[in-house]
Image (cartoon, rainbow, N blue to C red):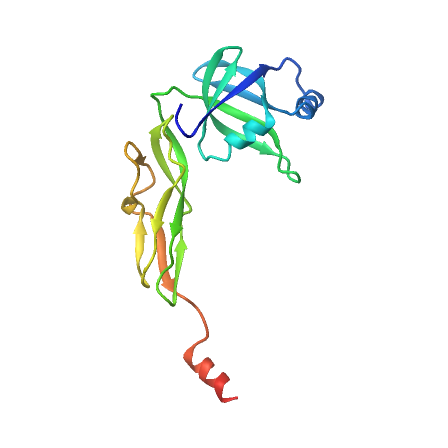
Length: 193
């Protein structure tokens, strides 16, 4: 199993509706549905804590064990309680291990630009195609020493092996601009008062 994979035991759900979903959540589980690749949807209950932990990894592969039958899935849609942040429901889409899937990954920066420069991430995510069981959690760009006017295009990002960029290669992802502050005249006027 890869580092971004989790195996979760599941039990089949036969009762549906809000009341049944509440009972599942009170039992420390989260209702979920598994679908895709032409299969009939499977309604299951997953252990809430372990499921929440597995979702801390972006684009995590969740291997659902339903009575010995394994389903390799990705979280397609996650509903959370707006106040408590707990999981309310998850839609899981079935993938094949050798399948190429399209996902969005975040662009993260490290470091800081030159003094007087603001480095802005214009596109916080990019779209890529990668193997379902080897999806990147993101791409990192070191912006240390960026000067005003420095730009990073999507095609300039260093992606892991076997990951293909889908976002337009000419898309401006990161841009360094001049920090807006007091003008020199305003600063001089303030000093003379």
